[in-house]
Image: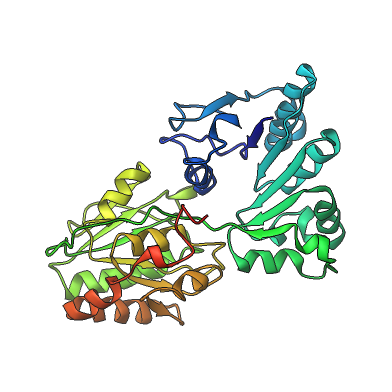
Length: 344
C-alpha cells in the first residue's frame, strides 16, 4: 500500500534544483496523512527536500536510447518489475506519455496524472484519441487550473464516469499571519524565468523608464535566464538581478517588498508567483492570461488587460504615486480563497 510519485526527469526535487512541479509535490504532500506511505522517484543530483522518502533513478542506457523522460519512466517501471510488487497508487506529474505507459505495465495500480501545463502543448496530448485513451486508462486526471482542464477536454465526448475522473487541484500556500509592515522596501519585484512568455522583455523596458523617473525605487529580479535570452547586468545600482535562488529566500524577500509584477503574455497554467505575492501582502500587478485570471477573481489585484510597456509603466506609476493604492491592492486574505494548502 504505497503511493509512488514520479517526477519529470528534469525535476530534481531539491532546494538547489527545483521547478514548479517539485514545489507543488512538496507543498501538497507536506501535511498528508499518507506521507509515510509516499515515495518520490526522481533523478536526484543534490540533497532532496527534507521530510520525504526519496528513491534515486539514475541515468541508464535507456535515457540515451529512448530519451530522458521515456528512459526515466522505464527505470521507474523496471524498479518495480524486479521486485514484482506494485504500488497501489502511481502519481505521474506532467508526463502524459509516462502515465499511459505505466498504466499498461501496472494494470493493478491506480494511475493519477497531474497536468501542470497546457495538455495540448504535449505532442501526443494534442490528439483527441490519445487524450480519450488516457482518460480511460487513468484512475484520475488532475489539473492545476480550470483553464487547462478545459483545454484537455476539448473535442472529447465525456460520459458521467469520465467527468468524475477530472479534478482541479490548485497550487496553494500557507496563509501568512504577518504583522503589518509599516515601512516596506521601496522596490518592485519580478519573479520568474527571464523569457518573453513571462513578459520579461516588456517589464524590463518599463522599469528602465520607472528607474529614470523614480530613482529612489529599486528593482529586484529573481529567476533563470534560460538560454541567455537577455543580457543581465548589475551595473545599474537600482536594478538588481539575483538569479535563481532558494525558494524560501524569494518568499522572505516578497514579505518585505512593496510591488510585485506578473506580466505574463502566454496562458499561465496557474500562476504560483501571483498567489505568493498576494499572500505576502504585496501590492500586485498581474496579467489575466490563463490561470492567472482564476486567482485574480478572488483578490484586489491591479489587472493588466493590455500588455505593453505603457500599460506596465502606468500601473507601476499608479502604485508608486499613491500609498493608499498600494494599501488597497495589498489588502488581501488568502484564507478566504480556494488556494490554501489545508483546503487543497
